[in-house]
Image 1 (cartoon, one colour):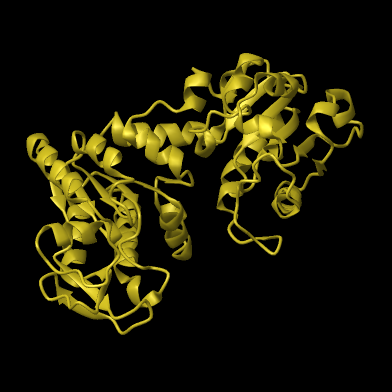
Image 2: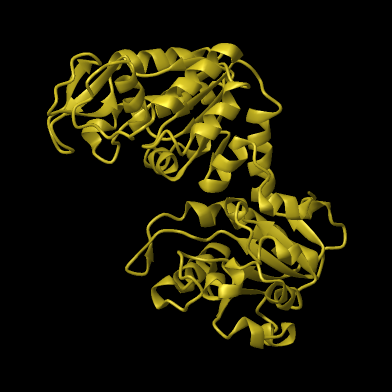
Length: 392
């Protein structure tokens, strides 16, 4: 893969730029701009090159139909403010537009094509649709790593028809993931949460052979606590996970990787209940596990202190309620503290994790924060992503 910065002939060219601007919208208003803010450097770089920029992106899953509530109009307005440039939203059918008509106004150098997923051909990875897109530009740039696990026309087939590069954000994402999977600075620890252990089993298996410690928290840890013979009451759990857990512990033993799970927890009778700290063998049938306890927090902090590299994906509990956010906050603050002191290389990923770090204004105190969900996890599983394969 080549970065757009490696093309000496980029000046004054028309660029087809694939971005992931799939931000949360409530009543037409953006509630989290992180994904947009991260790709601004690529746009500014192309503007400096006097490029004409055609942006491709999507919101939601309209499944090939026009859904007004999934229009990119709010994103268009935000980009205009952020760049202090005119950004035209083009709603005309992509199959009926030409390059010449896109930039009729000489003052306009950036256009945003309406939601690419309004076209069924996009998710079908249709070659003719990709060819039509390619006719609009001289060069293709993928700066949507978070979409690159999808074999879609604007991610995969488009590379057959244009010289293709990665953008600055994509380059950073791959660089950060390589540092924690290939160019490892040991000791390295992974803190992994989430509700289902089955969705992250391949990630855990792939990381066990490379990492020194895998710390399992959140809903996934409930399954391990139950596997160890303890009652977990009304806690979130996944059925038939025993074989998965057995496999994880067996593999970890052969690869000399420690699996750490909670020794104490915070429980309540419901999601808004009164928090109580308990040992894992003290949980009542009418209680649910909603956070990790102080003993577990200290164990994790000590592991962070003794690690040169940290990967964090998934909060430690039901952080949406401040009563049960302490474990996640303490983890975040410890990583931030050590990163500021240049003691640890820290990478975080996953929507909930990013949301938590954002709430603490800690984004700049991680070496890299990934907004990619599926692509982030699939890369960690060791899979070759369609978007990367196409660019290679």
